Structure formats: C-alpha cells, structure tokens
Image (tube, rainbow, N blue to C red; front, side, top):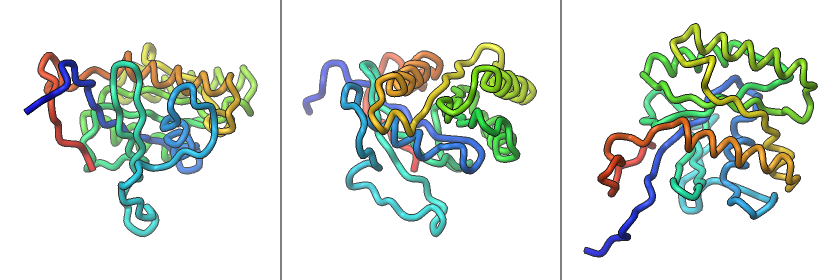
Length: 199
C-alpha cells in the first residue's frame, strides 16, 4: 500500500462561544484557502449539512496550513472528540453567559488547548477590545486554562470573507496561533497515519 512519505497531520478543532459572537462566520473564514482572498466559503463538500436548529449536529469545515490539516466543527459539542478549540468572543459584548458555559464545558471534557478569537474587532475601539481581552483571560484562568499566555487574536471574519487583506491576515494569524498552541495528538507524534475523526 503506497503512502505519502510525510503525511500532513490532521486535527479536529471546534468553535466555542456565546450565540451571536460569530462562530459560524469565523469557521467559514477559516475555510478560505490562504491567498484565495474573500468570497463564498462553505462546509466541506460532500459532508451532510443538516440544520443545527433541527438536528443539533455541527457543520464541518476544512482548512489547512503549511504543516497541518484541520476539520472545524461548528459549533463544538461535549460529545465531539477535539484536539483543540477556538473560543469566539465579540469585542462588542465581551464575556456573556454562553462564553462562561463553553469555557466550563471545555474544562469538564479536559480540553486544555484553547485559542481565543476576539471577533468583530473592526467595530470595536482599542480600549474596549483590550478590556474584553482582559476579561476573557481572567475567565479562562479561573477555569484552569493558561489565561495569561494563551493566544488571543483580534479578527473580523466578515471583513476577511469580503476579501479585505488586513482582516484576511488576522484569520491567517489565528490559524498560525492554532498551529503553535494546539499540540499534535499522541497518535500523530512521530507516527503519522490514518486517524478516526470526530463527528
């Protein structure tokens, strides 16, 4: 059986966050290949996309960096097997009940590698954004995460999808943060190969 000499590791990550804080827009922006600009981005071709409101199932998106491939589950559920997650927090609203609930959920299921996306950053001024970031870091620390040091990237997924280079760059920076902060699962370390996926 032939195989690529250096298979690219595959990880499954999920989106977490309060309703209305841009999780799905963020997942769509992540699925746009680097250098492709904006434009429509959607769920993985061929994957079923039932309405979460009807089924409770997450949508699946795919994205890739130079060193990894990701499946993004939006939104993540407690039963999903995740290697890491992106916590979306709107800079216009800050920590909300859904934010607290999802951070607590991440702790209950033993999900330590979280990266924060401070969403809608194009609409928030610097002082407000800094206040929200501090609030999120305090919450994460209180729930056993490395709140002082984990990455928090200011993004505008909507502007990125519209093809604006500055904001497209923030989505790339978010993926770079995931690459750096979310470790490879044990089965991918030194022995890359087929792996079952969540969902």
